[in-house]
Length: 108
Image (cartoon, rainbow, N blue to C red):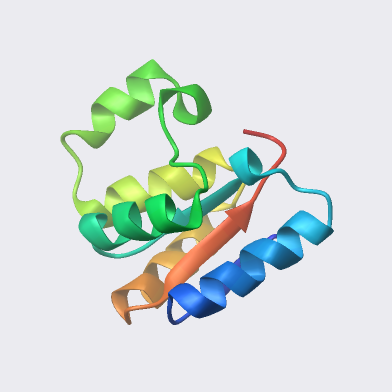
């Protein structure tokens, strides 16, 4: 998927977000995923972009995430943005290596 970028840090994330905005995506259509919940929250707040929530996933899927492992939760959220299960799994593998995933999606 061309609207997925894998980066190593906040500086690279900021650059990719700017690129997505130049392509016509609004900040509320750009999502950031990190392996650690605190890192994801910090970067999302610092870069002023969206956190994926009930609106993107639906009530039942959001509730199910409470009982899932972090990896399962991340895959579920990525799939809710239109990534295939295989693409979501590959992104999760990148996050396992400490990478940050940025997804731009108009479908959420």
